[in-house]
Image (cartoon, rainbow, N blue to C red; front, side):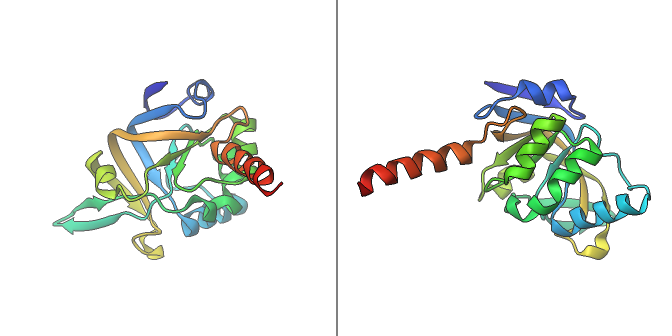
Length: 194
C-alpha cells in the first residue's frame, strides 16, 4: 500500500503501516544522528527541556549538506546515514519522546523493533545514494539546533513535501524485512550446504 501522511503522526497512523508499505511525508521532520541522539537522552536524564517537541514526529538519520545564503540555510543533499549507529539510543528516544517514525538506511536492531511494537512507531528506509532526490522534497530549513556538534550532527528542522518514497522496514507489529531476508538466506544456505 502507499500512504501520504502529514506530520505530526498519530499512533493510529503508525499502526496502519505494515512492512513493504510506501510512505510520503509532508510537514516537519527532524534530522538526528549519533551525537544528537546522545544529547537528547542526556538532556532528558537531567530533567531539562528539549528545544523542540518530538511527539508524533519523524526523525531522519541524516547529516545534510547545506549552504548558507545570506541568513537562509539551503539543503543541497540529504541522503540517509546508516541507522544501526543509533540502535544504542533509539529505543529510549521512541519511548520517551513519542516519535512515530524513524527514517534511515540499512536497518535497525531488535531493541528498536521492540520500541516500535510497544509504543506505536515504525522504521522506514530512504534509498541510499539518492541524497539529491531527498533534498528536492525539502521546502525549507525551519531551524537548526546544536550547531556546536557540527553541521552533520546538528538537529535540523526541515519542512518537507512528499518526502519519500520511504519503505516501511520495521512495523509496529514486530515484522522486520531485514530479519525476514536474513532468515530466508540462512535457510537457503543450509539447504545448499547439505
